[in-house]
Structures are given as C-alpha cells and as structure tokens.
Length: 375
Image (cartoon, rainbow, N blue to C red; front, side, top):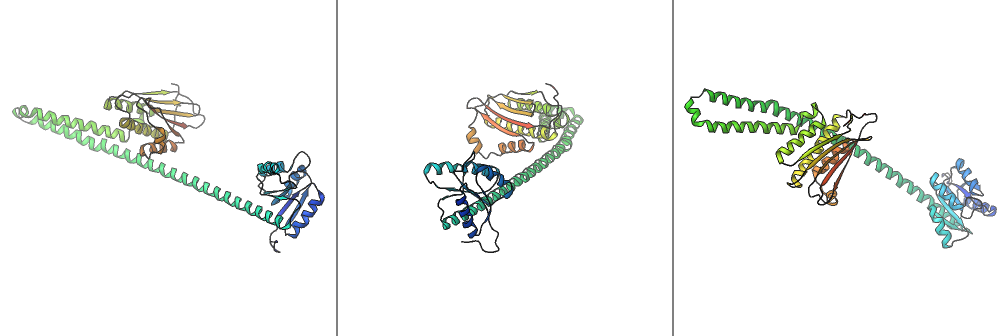
C-alpha cells in the first residue's frame, strides 16, 4: 500500500555500501511513497548523518565494511536515539540472524528485494515502533499517576497522624487538668468530711474508708498513666531519649520485664516530628512484645546517630517470628509503624531468627550539617 498524496512521508536513511543496491532501494522507496533523506556507505558516515537528518527508520546492511558493521550501528542507534532499524542482508543463515538479534531490530529483509516484502516490513516496523512508544508513554503516565497517588496518600496519612496526635494531646490535657483534678478534689473532700464525723463513726468505718481512699488513689494513677500514654508531656519538655527511658521504666514496672535504653552520638537536635514518630513506633513495638514475646524476655531500645542520620532499634530476646509470613500479614500495628517511618523519610525493617528474638529497625535520614552532641 503506497503513501497517499498529502500524507506525511516517513523519512528513511539507507546504510548500504553497494551503490547499485542503494540506488535501486532508493527508487523502490520513493515509488512506495517514502522520503529517502540520505544514503551512507559505511558506519562512520551513517552516525554522522544521523546527527542532522533525524530519520524515522534506518535500513542497514549487516555486512558493512570498516570498523562499524550494521549490528554495531543498530546497537548505537538503539542506545543513543529512539529510531527503529531494519536489517538488509544477503545471508539468512542462523548465525547471522542470531548475531543481529542482539541489537533488537524491527525486521530483516533478504537481498534481492521484493517490493511487497520491503513495503510490508517497513510498515510493520514503523507501526511496532509507534505502538512501543505509545506503550512506553502510557507506562510513564501510569508511573507518574502512581507516584502522585502515593504522595497524596502519604500527605493524607501524615495529616491523619497529626490530627490523631492533636486529639490525643487534647484528651490527655482533659484527663489531667479536668478529670484528674476533679478526682483528686473528690478524694480530698471525702477525707475532709471524714474528719468532721464523730470518733465512734470513724472507728466503726475506718477500714472501709481506707479502701475507698485507696481506690481513689489507684484511679488517679490510672488516669495519669492513660494521659501519659496518650501524649507524653516529657517528650515535649525533655526530648525523645528521656521519653523512651520513661517508657522503658513503665514497661518494667507494669510487666516485670527488663527494658533499657541506649543513646549514642545523637545530633544536637532533630525535628519534633521525628521524635513523635519514633516514640509511637517504640510504643507499638512494646505492645507487640507484650502480646507475642512471652514472659521471659528482655528489651533493648537503641538510638544512635550516624553520619547519615538516626538508627533506632527495638530488640527483644523472645522466641522470634517467621518474617516471610510477617510480610504477608495485614497487621495494622506493623503497617502503622512502617507508615510512620515513611512519613519521616525513613525505612523500617524487621529482623527475626527463631529462638533468638526480634529486632525492629528504623533508619531515618537527617538534614546535612547537623552536628553530633556526643554520647
């Protein structure tokens, strides 16, 4: 099928060292409606012409003389320019075809040429190249959409976590400043009223009152503990290391399992966002240890500065777990930890060996120019 008048002609560069063959090929191509932009007799000449001619397709003889043969021309064209190549060859043996395929050509034409075969091979090559470019563009567009969607989801997740932290802080303040104070005042009122009662009444019901007062004290401590877990004020006032040490102490006192915090070579400062997310990761990790690591377990939290940023780990001496199954699980706790690490530009990894415990590791990059504060 020849090109119709008025249609854009496909531009073809012929790379053929035999002048009779190239002239015959040019006449055929013009009759078929193509624009022959030039003829090169060797590889070096072909590369020079490619710089200025910008053809839509190359017809290249495999057996070119000189330092660059047709296969090398096709390989360079594929690497440097997005131009389809069709090989011309007088030989169709298996070795020649196998060698030529290395350059991923769009077709082969065996000499002497048959006009219909030449036309069909060129049209198929041009169409395949167009299709490949369209698929590549769609793939790039899809990748960009996925990247944009990922960034949007990350922004939404960050906003949800910030809202969650704000709500926790508000509930924590309400518990401490309102409910906690009212419970304390109620305890004081009961003790004051008790002092006004007749001695014989106090003697008769003193044990009962002691039980009530003890319950009020327990409730006060529980409210303080809930308030602290919702939003640790120590994190705002004294920093991440102090907050982690307080968390470890509470873990020991509540669950009778040894826990320690090691801090080394920390930078002088890092953002409050990093502190909050690492604190929440540690909190979730300790909850997992309580649920899965058993009674006889020791916990070590290590926060260490590196030239690249911060390395944070929470390791236990429990029974370990199957990390293969872990990656396939839908646990919200693990997903939340990974999302929190991602929000601060970090990466979360889980290492576990059966019978030798589990380590959750987070590596967080920090801005350049942050100086160490020492151990």
